[in-house]
Picture 1: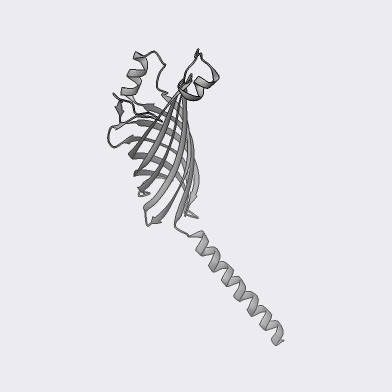
Picture 2: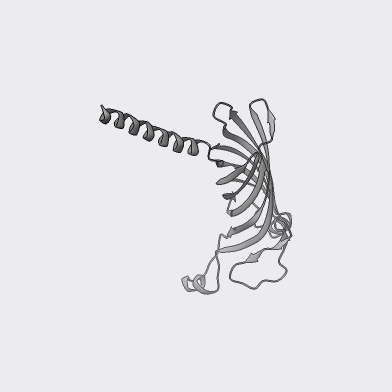
Length: 220
């Protein structure tokens, strides 16, 4: 009999420990989000020069994707995100990436919906490539002096503001991010740099982008 009691008590103890672990995991105050969508870019000074020189336009439309994770203190979220984008306009291609640290809140409710504003700052790096056509020369020329591409870069500190719409399951306090819209921009006007050269009369831009994204994830 005592062996049966011992086994029952052991099973109860194991069950309690398992439940405790499950509860700790279930209520871990972390939100994870994945997102992807479209964006519209603006670099007015560079775009003006491109048009003047007849080498196309700056890519206005593009695609983006990324992920973020945040720690929740009551209704306040403190976290970070990484996102990448690619944009093209015929032969002109813009690729960007950014890392952002942000603060957000889940305090604004409308029924089962949460309207979560987010403000962040971070660093952005961009590479812009112009593909040239109808070039001629020897193979050696294109290894040394001639060029079939011009590649630029633009690095800057940025500010990012967006609003995420989330639905909430009240029984388990799980948040499902659904969509978000936002705008990010360089804090100051920074120069474009042609990679591998020391060019003069370089335009400066405050590179900005408006974005709309579908988002999904979980938070507790």
